[in-house]
Length: 409
Image 1 (cartoon, helix red, strand yellow):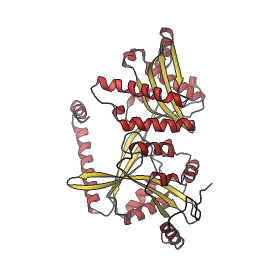
Image 2: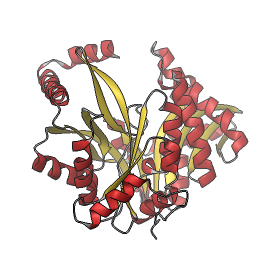
Image 3: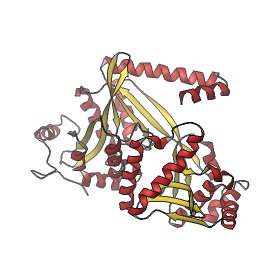
Image 4: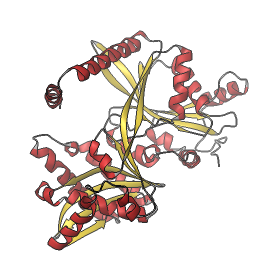
């Protein structure tokens, strides 16, 4: 199913897009580009957006309007929205790129960096353009052609792209052909391929690790009135999120650090996103209580056959009881029973995930600049900084590296 943009309805393209469509028919451009300067304007293409997601079997929940719209409303203040809609010769949407411009200081200069909505806050993974299957090459060529004429940007940074991202792969080819400077970097990503039964999952774990998911939960049940519940109603969201924020912050406060949820923007984002996911039936927000005290939480969501773990927390007072393991065991058991095929730990090089049967993949970031000297100079400086960082990591003792990381934090 395609969302076709018609004459004078609310989704009509402006006159410049009509001219671009005529140019397309004449073979002058691969696709036409419609620019949305407000999120609400991009929402007008919601039907096309949902159709494109339905056609992409590998699309992630981080590419949905629910995730990105919640993020933009929480984090978008003081950022310039730039939503690009790519339209073919039949005036059907072939791709959508929700972007924004941010100001960066580069020595004494003011630099404009183009990023995907959802990037920069540390919340999103697997971001990408929303593209019709088979249209990745045309979208990449059209994007670069459009950027070549656009003067509002200096650098572009596309983050946490999946290895099989059509946008990322095709853009690399086009950038090479265009001669634009670019570099890529990879980050670790862990996930568990879930078997059909809980028993089969346990059998795949190391024998010395298995008791953490079997014996400890039984021991909790013998010592406390243990209850595991799922947040399923809108009126449960606020108290459940408060428990998440509080329990997650406890660990960071013990270290003398502010923690992720000290940010009011992030708390606002979680509320907006959780409300949207709850309406869609995607929210998997689980809480564990001992003697009526909530001591552990897992904030997950499910999209298609994948369950994503976004955030969790537990009361350090119960660390010896392994309450976090007990709750994750129950969530995994529930998700396997519900037919989920993957439990996604998302990004981060945390080796403990391997104990749960996770295997490692990678995301990659792509950063590039066009013909403008300021952008090229910035990209060259960042490349040099990355090379210096790699040298430091390979030559300094681990104890010195840990000290530098703590000071940076």
